[in-house]
Image (tube, rainbow, N blue to C red; front, side, top):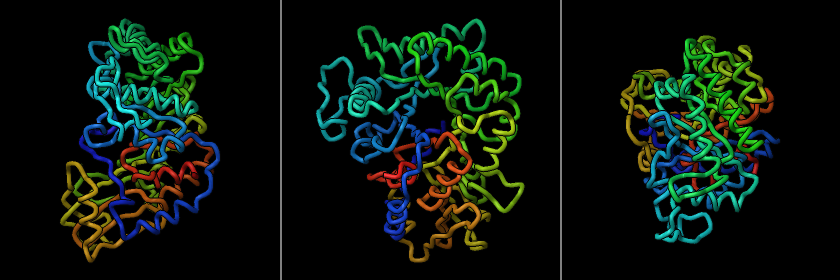
Length: 396
C-alpha cells in the first residue's frame, strides 16, 4: 500500500501544544452514521512495538468495522505468508497480547495470526481481510489466464480455508481479500478484471459472504485506464488512495491529502472521487483514503508560512521524538488551509503536513454528503494510544 520506510506516527502525541484542543474536537463529534471504517494493520509493526493487542488497548477494535491485514505476498505464482516470524512464530507476551495471556512458546501457531484469532473471538462482528501486496509485475504475471485460477486457489486454501503450512491449520482466519494491484494500466484492464472475477468466483464457492476489496490509485491516468463499472461488479469495496498528493519525493512543500483546493488544477481527494464516479464506480463502494502519517521538509523559507515553497525533504522514519522536538520549537505554529481544513506545522525552518481532528471531521462530513461507502485508513499504528483520530469516524 505504501513504501515500508514510511513510519506512521501520532500527531496528537507529537504536538502536545495542540493535543488538548484536538481531543476536545474529537470528543465533540457525534456518531458518523454507518459507513465502513476500514483500517490497515501493519504486519511489520511488531518490530516497532505495535501489536495486535494495541487494537484492543487503544479501543480501535471497537471503532473499526474491518481490518485489512497487511500483508500477504505473491511468490512463484502462489499466495504466501509474507513474514513467518511476525505472522506465525513470534511469541506474544502478556502485555502485547489481545487477552493478556502470553503465547505458549511451544505452540505450533503464534504471532499475529494467533492474535487475530483471539481478536475475532472477542469482536465477532469485526471483519478481517488479508491484504495481498506485491510488485506490479507480480500481479501482471498471476493475472494471466494460464496462472490466475491456480493462484487464487492457493489464496483460498491458505488464508480462507486456513492451510497455513503443513500441520498448521487456522480455518476462517480471514473474511476475504484486499487486492493491492494499485495501478494496472489500460493494456492490463482485462486481466485485472478477470483476476477479480476469479477471486469472486472461488470465494463465493468457498464461503458465501466473503469480502473482496481493492486498493486503487487516485491518479487521473490510472482512473481512465480501468473499466470501473466492471470492476465494481466483482468487488465489494474500492479503497481510493486519496493521499500522497505531496511528499518527500518533491523539493516543494505541500499538503499530504487535501480534500479540496482553491486551485482548479490541483489534485485533491474530492476530485479523485468525482473522477471515479464519472468513470462508472458506484459511490457506495468507494472508500475515501485517509493517511495516519505525516511528511516533513526542512530548510523551508517563510513565504506563505512555509506552504508551497522550496524545502529539503526529510526521508526516513518519522517518529514521536522528531515531532515533539519540532513542536517544542518556540516559533512552531499550527496553520490551516481554509478550503481543505488541512493543517500544517511550521517553525520558520521545518514544515510538517498531517491530518488532525478538524481535517478528518471535514472528510467524515464529505463521506456522508457524497454517500460514500466509508473510509480506508493507512495505517492504524499512526494513531495515538487512545485512537483519537479513529474516533472522528467511529464517533465513540
